[in-house]
Length: 248
Picture (cartoon, rainbow, N blue to C red):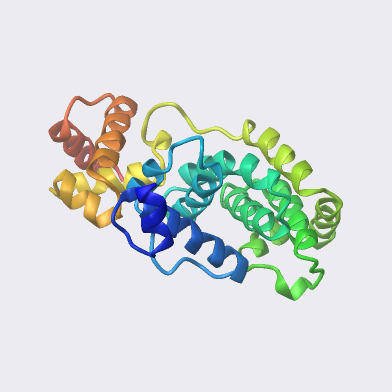
């Protein structure tokens, strides 16, 4: 009750009330079709883990995904897929379109161009738009890779999918893209960035501040990095970075 009152009064006395306000901010951003003006801290995602408030959690997951799009598209994709069932169940074309567009951009980044084009077609249909000039700049890579004729045909296929069908389609496609389980190629963009910052001598709190994440998240990244690169500590990790740089 205290959290609900704080939220209603626009106060930020607790992580939950802050998370509810962030959910409102994400929803407004998606409806206006603009980027978030500030990143969403991971702590606020953790604060709305209760199954009793699935919609705010889904919105915060989408916002967190928007925050991570450039640095860690793999984690961003996981967050969107986590939010997608809740968003699709709302039968809200604008929110569904915003979610699917995030996945279309991630698919393009991962060079899954057919998936990207189909999802983009679904986004256009949900938004009631057929203007080719309204396509986002990142879709150019798919058009160039597939050829204009094939790209346009895939757009049309996507336009015939409902939001639920598009969600099911991208969930099936997701399992077909994988990253190596070990070695440098297995590191996500964020893990690679953490590795770089460790080699520069930054502490966990400094890395957390630089990446806008919690110290616990940095520790999790380091745990994964150590396992993937078969090192035991930060000193060995830094030595591996030097060794790899000398071979480049």
